[in-house]
Amino acid sequence: MDEKFDLYSKFQLEGVFWDAARPDDKFSGTLSCNGKRLELATRAELVTPTPAMLMGTDDASVPDVVHGFTVKGDCTIIGLQQINTPGLLDYSKGRGVRWRYFRVIGACLMGWHLANDTTEVLTTADLTYTGISEWFPGCGATITQADRATLISLPKERRVVLDVCILAKRFHLAIDIDPNFEFKIGGRSFKADSEPVITLEPAEPKSLEWFVEVLHRLENFLSLCLGSSVRAKTMRLAGKSEKAESGWLIRPRGGKVEKPSVAIWLRSDSSQLARAVASWFAMSEEFTPLESLIYGTIRHSSLFVETEFLSLAQAIESFHRLMYKSTVVEPQVFKQVKEDLSSFIAQQSWGQSAIANRCKEAINFVNEPSFQNRIESLLADIDPARLKQLIGDPVIFEQTLKQTRNYLTHPGIEKKGKVLAGSKELFLFNQKLHVLLRLLMLKAMGFSEEAIFDQMFQQSRRYS
Image (cartoon, rainbow, N blue to C red):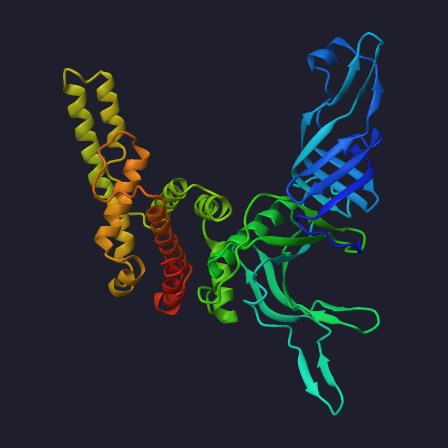
């Protein structure tokens, strides 16, 4: 389709819709999006009131996938949740007026009737993101001064700045710079806003679900590289026949966009960026919950400083758990220790009591490093001089983190001296945790500490 939609497009479209599983059962309605919520409302119809309607038990089943033809063309709506069935029932006159009202919790694809979000028929996707235009080079325009004119030349084709095969996920990723040239009739004005376009081409056709996952993982990757919250802006999908099978994804969701800061974003050439994005997608599936915690919960949500602190503390602990498979003693030694302790407990007079069961359960975790040991291990991997510049005294930092975490997660315990209670103190400490997490994750992806430290230091000084 010719018209372009973004993930947060605002519209109100009249159309005819039907359950994809029952194409002959059509109904008219309105598909609307206010940039935050996507909704489908059916047309009002005259009904004869029944007892089931009064009890609210007459509602028909909610379709999994709805196809439609709107004033903007074909569409596919996936993931509907019925909110209510508004209307008026007049039992005295034996008539009523009702309609159905759905919230779309999945997505909408404008321009194409897709069977569902799991069918593997999509061959390519073009993505754009907010806040990354200045991070990538421009389109390569040239300016020539003539006697009585200034000539501006723009390339016809997109400039390729990255081309890499992601072997771990078996897809090709390319980043092109679109000149995005606009010229007004009459020659009064023009503009050329260079925009990076990320193209995904899997080795084999994939599902909408797969492409959406990659869309958000790239969003997280770019947020890590820039040090600010990046959001996906548009996603155009295509099948084997691009003219007949293509459409724009609409999927509004909560979150925030942060203005990028030149001082804190990474400096890297195309080869470094290629290695980094390949490393990001090579991370094991165990890494995904940590990634979602940092960029899904923390970066894209408005949290109280206490909640943000606890999320960051959990993320740092999870990072160590995933990246460092360390134990207090060797597994074979622990196995013998566990057997001896379990045997000792069983021999006691209280060996069958509730406290005995608690002791046996606790034994299972005694070979794991403590929270304090995990933090000390992570800090030990950073150059001491650089570490002090980022977080101050490492000992005080670790004590503050541990004591504040324990105080907030165990209400009623003694408040120790390093506990942060004020909102301002917690906010500033959270910024240190953000920088520390970003440094650790970038190092895990292959960036040298020396190469990225200046950006980390600038980020740590933003609010000081």
